[in-house]
Image (cartoon, rainbow, N blue to C red; front, side, top):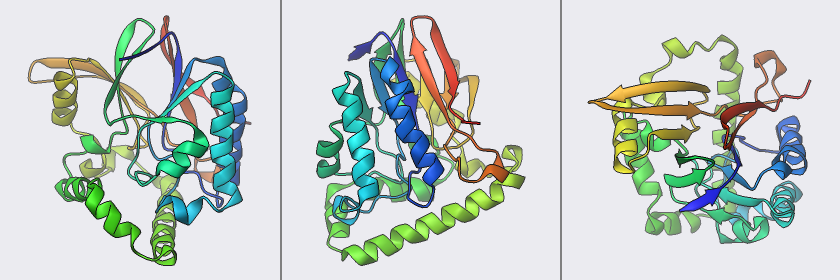
Amino acid sequence: MLEFDNALIISDLHLTPAYPHTANRFIDFCRQEARGVQALFIIGDLFEFWVGDDAHLHTPFHQQIAHEIALLGQSGVQVFFIAGNRDFMLGKKFSELANWKTLADPSQIRIGKHTWLLSHGDVLCTADPGYQLFRSFTRIPFFQHIFMQIPTNYRKKLGERLRRRATIKYQMRKNFDPLKASVKGNVTLEACSQMTSRYDCDRLVHGHTHLPGFHEENWGGHSWKRWVLSDWDLDHPEMYPRANALRIDASGIQSVDLIQN
């Protein structure tokens, strides 16, 4: 098991050239806040979409992001990545450029005084069986190989469709009420209970839902604590800019507000 005295965890940055302020904040983060810890864990959806290394790594934008991560690693910070639902196709070439280490979802990490269970979070949304079926198929190497046979231009068009749908989501966020959100988009107590029980770990950290917060939960006699990271969006100021990280050390866990005024 990986062990560190301190670490930062981030998720759901959804980086894209279309959102330059968010991307610039991540670059500053790599050069500033992230330099003060032993490890950085990026637990999914670093990019808005990724349809293959060949479709993205020729662009200066994606090359710079990989370069900034590599520089962070060269400074002495170990960088780890858990794939999200948007960027699970990040491949070997990007990993070599970024010089990070990929981890399974979920992964157990020892930080400070406790063991933590890290997951992107989409696998916990079991109230949406259709998505879980889609997720299981898209993680099979054979189907990924078939997808990569599709011409690059068509794959990029598919990715752009995802980005436009996300833009609509951001435009709707101003009136978003999490209490009225579909349960399909959130984790279930049963899934969280099963995961924390399976790994005998009562501290769970995830992203994906874009519903940051802290929860003390129980199901079937089993109890655990759950921390949820926010997504990052500094390009839609009318919809409450947000960006956070979780810092863990011997003193405990705290949310770090990364919004620049």
